Image (cartoon, helix red, strand yellow):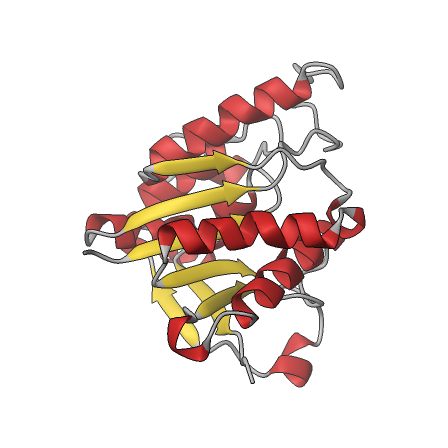
Length: 218
């Protein structure tokens, strides 16, 4: 059987900036990717620029954007988990962990990707990462896949060290940019215009490397 990667993140668009290039590369190399997105980001502040969404229509729009992003990356298996945006830290911990454990038992992934708990800025990011770490940590050591974590907090290197995984994704910038642009309600970024030169040094330096910390289970 080939490599199976499980990605667990809380919001549509979390995959776009930090992991889309890595996933596109892995998929080209034959990996199967399951993306478990906990919420639809229905409490997001952005409604497009100029606005084209409302608080009522945003969940359906973000669902379509998420599906488009996954197509751009090549993700084969998208799971929408049905939790509520901006409330992951308040969810029943046993229920959240059980849903993640069910994925681990079903998929037997060779790698899990999530956020580093405590170092990922948004409470949903931290709570999602914490649930993944708790659940993977309960597995027997010989059945425990490595967990790659994204982190963004200030001074994080002083606390958790430097990232230990670096993926050069310059060859996959087209897929990465299409993933980002799929989330139209959230991002209106000049650098992502259709006529942008993806081969420019400045562009590749900004978007061409994805970094992770391997979680240090004890």
